[in-house]
Amino acid sequence: MGRYLLPVVLCGLSGLCVLDAQPDERAAALQRIDSRRDAYATVAKQIWGFAEVGFQEAKSSALLQQQLKDAGFQVKAGVADIPTAFVATYGSGKPVIGIIGEFDALPGLSQEAQTAARHAIEENAPGHGCGHNLLGTGALAAAIAVKEWLASSGHPGTLRYYGTPAEEGGSGKVYMVRAGLFNDVDVAVSWHPGDRNDASPTSSTATVTGKFRFRGIAAHAAAAPERGRSALDAVEAMDYMVNMMREHVPQETRIHYIITRGGAAPNIVPDFAEAYYYARHPNMRVLDGIWQRIVDAANGAALGTGTTMELEITGAVYNVLPNEYLSGVMHKNLERIGGFAYTPAETKFAEDLRKTLTDAPDVALGSQESVQAMRGGAVMSASTDLADVSWNVPTVSMTAATFVPGVPAHSWQATACAGGTIGVKGMIVAAKSMALTTMDLFTDPTHIQKAKAEFDQKRGPNFVYKTRLEDRKPALDYRK
Ligand SMILES: [Zn+2]
Image 1 (cartoon, rainbow, N blue to C red):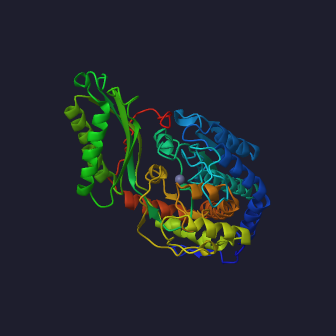
Image 2 (spheres, rainbow, N blue to C red):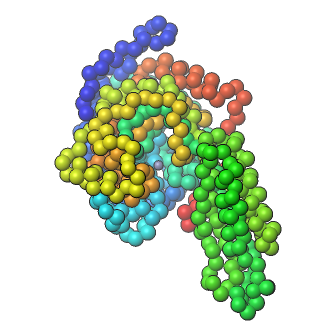
Image 3 (cartoon, rainbow, N blue to C red):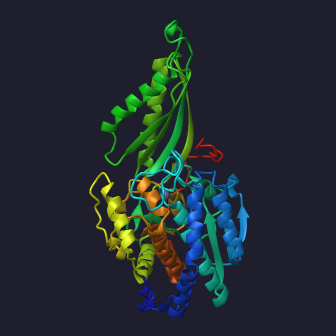
C-alpha cells in the first residue's frame, strides 16, 4: 500500500489537459481513511456480528446511518417504502455522485471469523458469506473521506451514500431506482468483496426469482388417498419438467430452486406446497422467454395434479451494464493503492482455508498483493441489483481481495474471511480506490462526459428501463 506517486495530469480527447485531484489532496484523503481504520474495522465487525438478512437489517442500517450523521451527512431513512433503505447526502448542486453501500447477510452461513474449519457461531443462523458488512463499511469510509475533501476544498457538488438493503435476492436497489432516488445522479460508484483486486468492467446475469405456490386437497394418505390432490406432487412435477428443460435452454442459463414448503406430515396429502425459483441469463430478453417456460411448467404441473398455482415474483434484476471508461479510472486508482500482504498468521489461515475448498483454486495465494490486469468482456454468472442502477446511471464497481484467493462468495469460508483481518485489509483497498475515483469525478468533468457518452451509446436510443417487478411493493418478507 501507499504506492502513490503516479502523475495526475491527464489530457482529454479535447486536447485540453485536465487535472484530477491534486496529489496532496489525494494523500490527505488516504490518510483520513488510514487514521480511522480501527473505527471502520469495528463497524464492519459489528455488522458482521448482526448478520441481518435482507430487509431485516435494522441494526446494520442504523449503525451506518449514525456514522454518516456524525460525519455531517443529512440522512433520509425508510425511503422507497423500505424501512432499512436510506440516502445520506452532503453538499449541493452538480455533479451528483452516489456511493453504494450494502449490508445484508445470507441465511445459514454463520461461521466463526478467521477459522479454517466449519464452525458455525449458531447453527443455521445467517452469516456474512458475501462480505456485505465490508461492502457497506468500505463505502462509508470512502464517502466520509470524500466529504471531508469536499468540505476543505470547497468543490461544488453533491455526494450521496445510498444505503441499499436486501441485495441478496431482495432486489432492494430496484425499488430505490423505481422510486426515482437515482434520477439526478451522474455516476454511481461501488465495489464488491472478492478473492482478487480487480477493476475490470464486468457484466452479470439478469435474474428473475419467484415463489410458486400450489394448493390441493388434504386427505388421509392411507385411508382416503383418492380424495386428496397433492400440492407436493405439483411441486415435484414442476421441478421434473424444469430439470428436463435444462437441456434445451442456452448454455449460459442458470436455474435453481428449493422446496420451501412440502407438506406437514407424510400421512396427510399436502394441500399446500411451495417452490422458490431463480432463473438467470446474461440477457434480460432471453431470460424473459426462459422464465415464461418455467411458468408454463408450473401451470402444466397444476393441471396434471388437479391443483392450483399462484406465482409471486419476489425479485428481478437486470444484467450489469459495465462502463469501460469508468472502469479505467477506477483501475488507475486501484493500481495507485495496490494490494496488500498477509501476516504469517494470516498466511497460515489462508493456506489451511484453501485446503477446505472443493476445487483447486484458480488464483494463487499471494495474488492479493497485486492488482489484476484489466480485461474486457467478463460476465459473471452471479447477479446483482447494482445492475438496475447501471441501466439508469453510469456505474462503476471493483472487487478487492477480502476473501482468501480461491474462496468463492456465498460460502462459510467467505464468512470466515469477512469477519477477520484479511477482510478489513481488502475493505481498506476498496475504500481508498473508491475515494480517489470519486474525487476524480468531482474534479474533472470530462470523466462524467465520457462515461455518459459510453452509457448512452451502449443503452441505445430506444432503450426503455422496465423492471420485471412492475409495481409490486417491496417483498419485505421474502426471507420469512
Ligand atoms: Zn454480494
